[in-house]
Image (cartoon, rainbow, N blue to C red; front, top):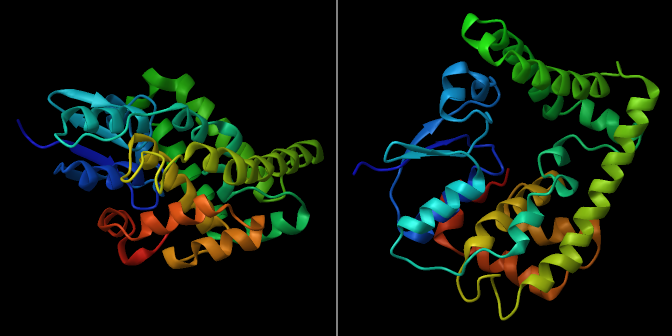
Length: 272
């Protein structure tokens, strides 16, 4: 059988999870880049592979795996390397209330909104929205018109907030959602994550398990959004933002960034 094909993008938080899992599980794969900046995940051809229009997506043996969980589960199922099974924390880390993608845009007040509006996050949103509208206007997209309309509405609302075009109640709602996000992220860091680590250093024990592939990339994104550019800056930056981290969380980060799989997923230890 041919190798799995992983549809991925270098800056995607969740696409990094299978990049960690592949070397840990001893699996070789081919890669196909889906340029999220150009909204290539909304190309009608890509929607044939994954109607959710998300990466990572994996194809193998004539089947498609269309979410991070499906991709990781499938890779584990075909690997001869056995790792600790998934627990409830994997579902928790994918909950919207601690969404690492929204963390890119989160602003709790006008001052933070000005910062986000002047950052690459706004460029990313504006560029994606333009490409999304172009895909939506193609004849091939008309069969999925409700899907495209919904995505345009959602991205347009975010674009309006970031560019001072939203009504005040929408902006205040955005501030409230952002505040809740960062409160929930802190709770996860100081309570949920250390509680999930038993003997450590990983949730899966002495080596990364299924949960760890999901949690590690979430943590990397939170560290990066908080200001860490390199892996070695992660703990200090997180503590500057959230206060002292539990010893288990610091040991967790140190154990991950020392692994070869981490350097493969984050070349030159550059976070994203």
